[in-house]
Length: 216
Image (cartoon, rainbow, N blue to C red; front, top):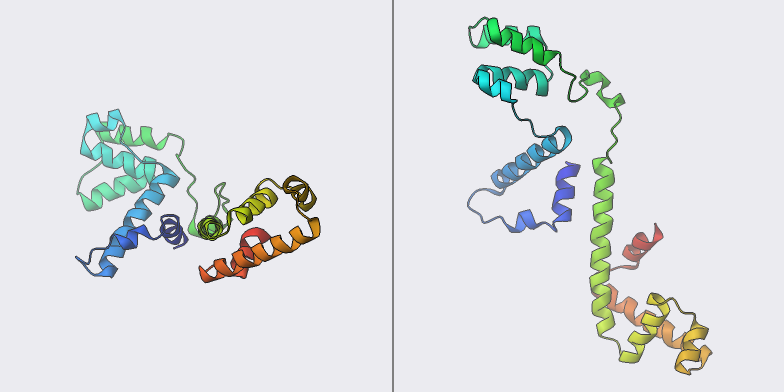
């Protein structure tokens, strides 16, 4: 579920905006989430494709290779499946091919379900990716709102903000550069920051949002 939320947040809920009402929302989301799951599985395991040898031997060999190489089935399990599901005995070239495929190194580690929690992943957890995506989304909102707020300032006020926070000049350096009284300049910048704060709050950016963004 975290992967689904991450996908929606990263795309600013674009999949929901594409919903045209030609089916129920539940059906539409089921299709979207199923595709996300398939993409997620392919990203973790890689997209499986049959080998040239399997294609040469035909569909039964492709099925054998998929079950053994991709899904981790044993030779005995494949033999049993062919006997029960297809009423066929696995022998000859197909049996030899199954043995050959089962001797290949596994493409991924297969463990019992009860042991799965102890297997570490080198990738970031879905929850960590979700936190990062939410942080990036918040940063984008703040940036857009701040740019809009700065556009409403007077030209000199925008210059003060640029010199203080983009060029990281001290108040003393700004006062000397602009030939302004340093003490008065402190009060001017405080007033401009207060104006920006009110404008951001009116645009839906709270002080808590700013603290979350810069507090990390």
